[in-house]
Image (cartoon, rainbow, N blue to C red; front, side, top):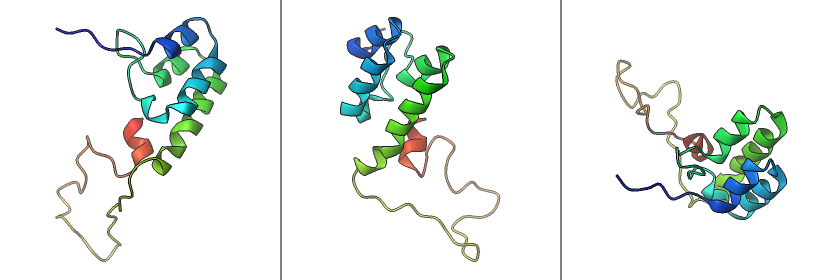
Amino acid sequence: MGSIPIRVTPYRAAMSGNWKSMLDHYQERVLDVPLPVTLSADTALHLAVYSKQEQPLKDLLDIVKDIKNLLPETEFLVPDETESLVPETESPVPETESQVPEIEIL
């Protein structure tokens, strides 16, 4: 089994409690937010939750909220109430897929 590539800068920042350094890193590299930071595949969001501090998590979520501006234009198919794309017994979106980019990251 191969090793998981980790992000050294956010890892060191999190381990030392330097949330400003971690946030600076992710503001410049928004698409890195869902990538592992630790060998156990924890992301920055996991580490912020583990810190039991509210602000680092809020700041990371604010960064993630803006990710849709960096992704290619996509239209999300949302049927109106009168139109059904699939029978009611089937879910229109598989549980592993998301219609909104920031939710996909979470």
